[in-house]
Length: 409
Image: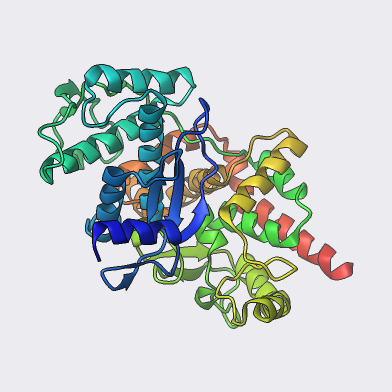
C-alpha cells in the first residue's frame, strides 16, 4: 500500500471525530481509524490522523503518528497514540491559524505557540508535554530526511535532587538536558477526597452500577479506563474465600486496557468482590441479552447500562461532573484513584516499613517507577489517624448499606 493509498484509507476508516477544537476557532480535525483499517495487511484501529479545514490529510504528522502506532516499540498503547494525536493536532492547528509552515518555523514561532497556550491558561505541565511531543516529531522528521535539522535548542538545567524515601537508590545526576522552551514547573500533590467527602459523593449517586464503579476506584485504585473496559472474564469468584482477606484480581492487558499494556494484580476487599460477583450473576446476563440482541454477540465488558450499552470514559467523566455540581465537591475519576493511594499507603505502612509499603502500593497502582508512588507519602501526611482507621471499613459499610437498600426495594 502506498502512502497515498494509506491516507485515502485513513479518511474512509473514521472511528470518531474529536470535538477538541482549539479555543481560537475550528482549523483542524482529529480522527481515528476503525477496525476495518488495514496497514501492511494488519488491522490497525485507533490510530489518530489529522485533516485540515478543507478535510485534506496533513501528510507529515500523519506519517509520524503511524510511526508511533505501528513501528515504535515504546508507544504501543492506543491511549498514548491519542495523546500524541492531540498534541500534534494542537500544534498544527496553531500553524494553520497563523498561516505558518512547519518546515520553516524557528524558536520564535515555537515560543509564540507556547505563550498562546499559557494565555489560554493551559497548565505548565501540559505545555511542556506538548513541547516534548512536537520536539520528538521534529527529530523524527530530521531522521527520515523530511527536513534538515530542527528548530529545537536544548540546554542543561539543574534538576531538584530526589528526596524521597528511596533516595539512596537514585543514581541520576543532579542535572538534565531540556529544550530552552520548556517552562519550570513545581511538583504538586495529588488531589484526593477525604473520607467524609468520599462518602458524600457515593451517597449522591443514584445508579447502582455507577456506585460499583466508584467503589472499585476508591477501594482498588483502578484507573478510569480499566474500570470502564473491565472484562468480566477476569472477575474473581469470591465463593469459598476467607472473608477477612483481600481477593486478588488480575488485570490482563489483553482483555483490559492497562497503562503501558502491563498485566498487574489489584486487591479487592471481600465485600466488594462479592458485590461485583452478585452484579455479574444477576444483573449482567439481563443487560448482556439486550446487547446481544442489538449487536449479535456477547459483550466482553463487565459494566453495561440497563439498556445493554457499553459505557464510555466520557460517560464516567460526565457522571462525576454532575455529582460534583450536585454535592459541591470537586470529584474526578483520577481523584478517586489518588484517594485509594493515599489511604492504602498509610494502611500498609502501619504494618510494615515505608519501603515495603511503597513497593506494595507501586504494584497495586501499576506505577512504572517508585518515584511516582512516593507522592502518596506527602498526601498521607495530611491525614489524621482517625481518618485512616475508618476509611476502608466506612466505605465498605456504605457499600453494604447500599446493597441492603437495593434488596429491600
